[in-house]
Length: 341
Image (cartoon, rainbow, N blue to C red; front, top):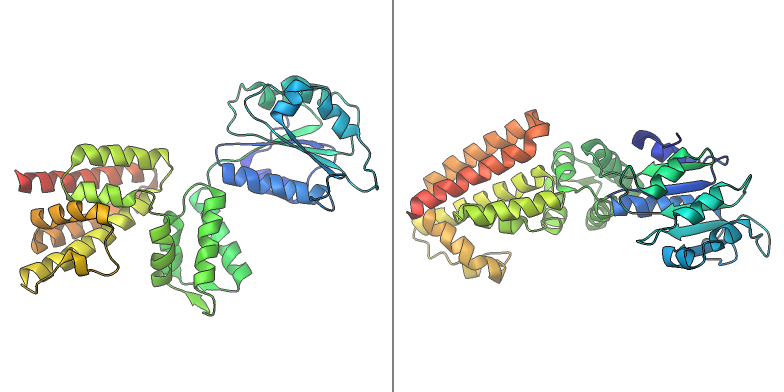
């Protein structure tokens, strides 16, 4: 078996093994799959834009003409140099063509196969994992440690330092998709250009808003007492891989805003949602108005303290963070519904 362990994949990508010229890159994190495929291609040819050194194939091409993969792998570059084949696997069965490729005694051509999430029993994955001249590289969603390493890497490249509290805030705001996470970090670095240090306010201004991914719908449903809608939105967030830390951050930010606004209302200052800055999105206005009617300032302060306790509990029991976040928000929703009754 030559399936590369997830922890060893980056080392393989940095120094591809020449004795294993066929590489299958697959997994649920499409951003990480793409990033690693591109790194392998760049390491395999002098110019990825040169069609004489890099052949780009689709699964439909190979399914229609199975011998083409072997022919491309054995083609000698017209002007010399290294050659590679980039094959994007799709819904068509390309296992027979890959099997013929693996049967070649020797090949100096690097063949990179880009695929999506493959089951353990998928023919393509099984075939590559069993071959001595191939390697299968899994690409799973980034862990917290992976995101921390990615942040450090991008900040170092941008010549910036990140305040410890800003780093702690940023890590849970990033999702499991490597490409999306890298994009958000680079956006933060661009925003902070000219500074030496990136702080919490910078993270909140750039990443927290950009990575909301329906978080507004979650907190709006919770504080408006719409438990059924809340459960639906939480399920969507889990499916999308939204970290519980992001949910907590959105809830804490929202409750702080509600408390501020409710305090202004109770003080008789003539508060109006139409005047808040930054402007509230029009689709949220009715939900926020409902929440402000259901909650008073003391109850919001008490809920704020309970939410802070839930955040602390989630950090102590990270494996149960999703459950803790869901329980905390459902409790808030229940409190709102009792007020409405």
